[in-house]
Length: 430
Image 1 (cartoon, rainbow, N blue to C red):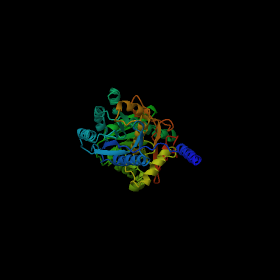
Image 2 (cartoon, rainbow, N blue to C red):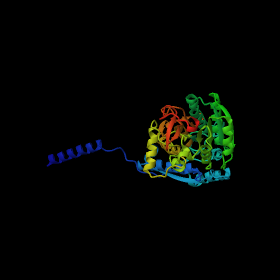
Image 3 (cartoon, helix red, strand yellow):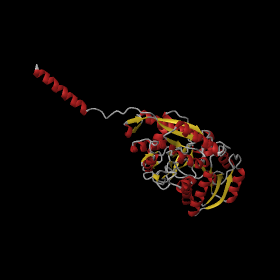
Image 4 (cartoon, rainbow, N blue to C red):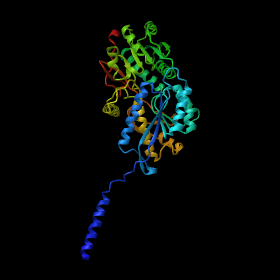
């Protein structure tokens, strides 16, 4: 009897030992949500699409169990709260946007902000709120270089702010290099700029002008147009008379499609490079058809407007978007940045072991050390500016990609490292 009891005990201990060897890793219980605040202007199509991109990232993360917070020994889901700043609507004063951001932070007490105000002027003013609340902010829309000036004016005060997308200098510089490819390919060297009269658009045009003049181009005209302009024929006639071989148009107002329609109907003997919303969407051909043929566009950052073979995560992003049955983007610019921004926070939280609101001063360092792959390439930040780094190699940094519309498709044409075709001239230029 004793022998039998002994054998039973021995077998029990053996089985228990086997089970211990095969026990799965600790299963972390779901904790309370990590709250992300998204204050922006939902009047703007890119903000509406940006929110969907944030929702998509949150759904993916929550479906996988949430974010591991090591200091708490738990996985926590993400939750999104929003506020409409209305700063993308004509006539909305900056202080109204600030009040919306302030109320969101005070009422909802988010652990971090994502996306942030749409209009650059409102985002500049929001920097002091970010500093006041020590609110880690992954900003993914406003493009003005002035945000870097504000940050560098007092890096300790504004250290909680990070721009996880392009700025208008990147946009203008990339546009310049894409345009300069035409000088090398066709011998073009004269350009005319049509610029929406807003901070970010003027910043982009100034960067383009400086870069192109350094490459041997001549800016034969630069015309500022007010928001709401709906007849571009006078300025297009000026461009025709200037001898330009390229027209660069930059802005975000909804009337800008009139410009390329008039360019086509007037047969202006130039190429056309458009840096604005609706023409950078894959649905644009369905709206404007052959009026878009041969037009060059710059949805930024790389891969957000259409997939690029050399950017694998851009293909994944668009595949997941379609699988969600989200509507096609009216304005895809920086939408992928909103998506990547959520993953930047997830990565930093998992490396830090705590949520941003617990110790924002310490958390800053973990965001600064971000090094991960995103839709537009490798994501890293410049510690001196808190600006996401962009250059021409997606293995080293993020990139911007220029496309040309060809028979209903946006074809990557610049930079060479990701290009899938060469630029073709519009027939009336040949």
